[in-house]
Structure formats: C-alpha cells, structure tokens
Length: 138
Image (cartoon, rainbow, N blue to C red):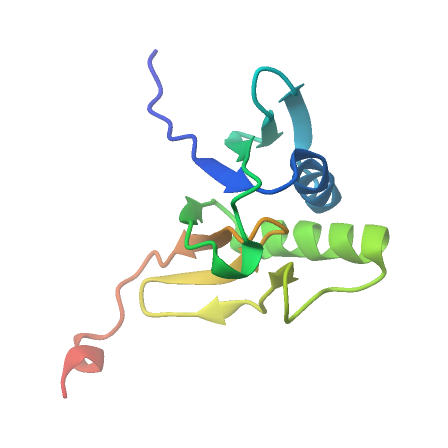
C-alpha cells in the first residue's frame, strides 16, 4: 500500500548543531552527509525532516515554517520538553531555540518550536469536534 508523506527540507547554518537539537527532542539521526553539501535526515516515529547546511541562513531572519500534524500533541509536547530539559537543563521559552507552551485554538491544540537554525515548526492535533457555531458569530 502506498502512503503519502511530506518531508520538509529546511535550511540551517550548522548541520551538527541542528542534528544535536533534534536528537535532544527525541529524534533519531538517519543520515548525515558532509559532501558534496552538508545535509541531514532525522526521524521521530513516522515524521521525517531533512536539513541542508547554508552559511547564509541567519536563524533570527529565517522565515521557514512547517506544520506537523500528530495524533497526540500532549504526548509529543511532554517528550520534546522533557528531552530538552534533560539535555540542556531548561525549557527555552524565548530566543533561539525556543518551545512554546501548549495552546488550544479553534482548529487544533498545538505548540511551536523554533529550532537552532531558526525554522519554526507548529506541532498540533486537530480538534475532533468543531466548535459551537455560535463561536463564529460576531
């Protein structure tokens, strides 16, 4: 059976730092290439992300974003934050890198991560029931 997937390819100034950050979250490194160009593949369950090294990438100016839809955002959030705290001693809430608190929105429950390369990931689980239609009235 064929499974449709999307695998984002995002920039970062340092493959080594990028991979270390994602390993701290709980991702597994699948491959790292140094030649002909810096490139890495990391995986967390069925989520796979690719990164390419670009010295021109400034984390504070990186506009790259990606939405990761997951089955259990609460579990993922707990695993990511506990991994960061275990490896870095803290859960960074500001600056780069950072991870937000969980938020309940009309469409989903989510949190945001900005990695060491400045890429922003929105990680969320869609709400199973639509909000009361009165919510949309002005």
